Length: 275
Image (cartoon, rainbow, N blue to C red; front, side):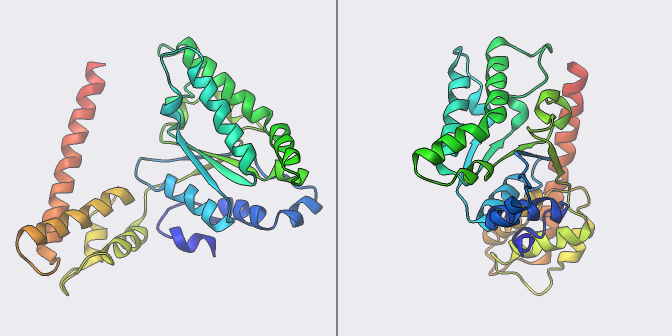
C-alpha cells in the first residue's frame, strides 16, 4: 500500500492514494472520462513531511520527480524568475508522465498588491499561473513530438508545499490550478511513536529506552524535531563513551529540544512585537 512508506505522516490517505492509483493505472480513469487534478497543495507546519510525502507519491507512482524551491524563482533581475518557471514546466512536459514539486510556494506566490509585492515577483507568479492554465496543451505537444500518447497530457501533477497557505494569492487555488488542498498536520502520540521507531532503527539503543514515554512528552513536535532528538541522543552517547543510546541520553536530548523550542518561541514573539 502507498501510505505504508510514510505511515508517520498525518494526512488523509485517500487524497494522495488516488493520485498514485491514477498515475499507475491511468487508462481505467480515462475510460471513465475522469481527469487527474492538475495541482495539489500540501500545507502544514514545517518539518511535518510534506516533501517526503511528495517524493513518496512519485516513488509509488513510478514516475519521475522534478523538484525545486519557489525561492529559486525569486530574482532581482527582471524576467529571470519567469524564465525559470517556463524552463521547469518544459522539463515536466518532456518527462511526462511525472510529478513536478514546488517547495515553499509562499516565497513566490504571496497575494499580489501587498506591501511586500514587487514587479518581478508578480511577473513570475503570472508566469506560473499561465503555465498551470496551459499545461495540458504544452505536455500534449511535447508527447506528440516524442511520438508518445496524447493521454500523457493528463498525467502530469504539480504538487506544491507551503506552511503559510493563508498568504497565497487566491488565483492559485481556483479550479484547474491548485484546486486540491491536503493538510499535513503534526503527528499525534501514535504517530510520534512511529516516527521515533523509524529513526531509532538507525541507532544502537539500550533496553531502558521507552519511546512511548518520549512520545507522550513531545506533543506538538514535528517529525523533523523528533528525528533531531534521536540524533542528539546518539551524539550524547558517543560523547559519553557509551556503547548504546540509553534513557538518560534521550531525556537530555529531549530537554535540549524543549529548551530550544522555548527560546525560539520567545525570539519569534519578540520579532512580532518589533514588526
